[in-house]
Length: 510
Image (cartoon, rainbow, N blue to C red; front, side, top):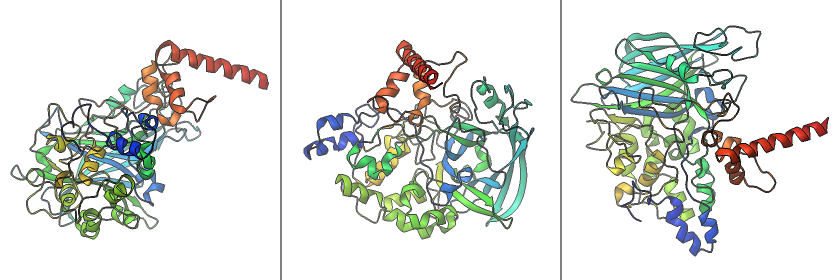
């Protein structure tokens, strides 16, 4: 395996790494040629049996990084509600009124939260006699035509030994950015998004609302690692899907224990009110992919209901992981020797000399050294490519955590150098330079403009796999979608031809 092409176009994905082995085994070269990777986005959600049936309370991803445009602040982003279909009305996507959405900060490494930022939401409906989310064109967040709205409060709770010692209301009745219903309903969604960014009195900022899902990956890995022969690698699984996001930016010195101890551990949870009226934790997330592919089924729901201070019960899942054995059984790449103490540093303690706090108690937290300045040119492989401002030192929106986690799982830190990856290297939408950094959500109208159709490139980027037809006159999905959304006159002509065909068929029916 080579190690000199991490940042270049020559970096080898799983497909290119094993193509020779597949060909030697008798697979046709033409079959391998179809695995050309492309830019894509996706998300890794629905990680445990119980929470998969409660998407409103499902943590999907957590990010923590030193703010690139305000390096004296730290930004935490927590996403919820997986697989939001943009046109999924008339009941669009809302945070739960019966839940506590919490961001936890451990600033001394003892596996207990010292600070807790709690978001609680309240839904208002103006006209309950209407079935509509909005009853007219929405021009601002206070528009009477925005029929269903949400607001939220933020409480800062300081703890000592798991007991609250103080509680401060940081913000109250802040409006949530609505779901992007479509161009006819919300012709200037960017304006609504900007109105939902609220400046806190302590110099921080907050945002809650819908956003493009920023996590990118090819989730068909669950089909026994891309079909068992790499026939499914490198395609966009969830392009065009959205999430509900909470973004919070605070002065770093408000989060850290001291300048001498700048490392924080971050995780997010959701607690839902149960039938007896008590809040019960149902979801938890720190590092990406831990509950997804490290914990076995018997521990997934238990992990979602637990706290980092009890993570010793999950230690064997980290030191003896299943994934490398699965890769070895399918692709004959030898799994590193166990116990995997190298994974304990990445997932439970932090990397020594980088983001491991002194006297650390092993626990599953996303650890960030806030004293490391943001990179001028972030590298998607973060620490593995010499960029210490990236994952696993916190997590930025652009960090390719799938490739990083896969390479570490396959022994990158214990001498088994490799360039494994899923051939998906960036998000389908660019991120912003300023808070909240997230890309705007895909519109319910899927890229339509006032004139009917946007440019081909916009349509292609916003349609995604979700809108690809199953088949049409012998054309496969890829061919058909490329023809209909390929850009320019050809794409528009095909759409026009399709409309004419539909009208003829409709007239015959009557």
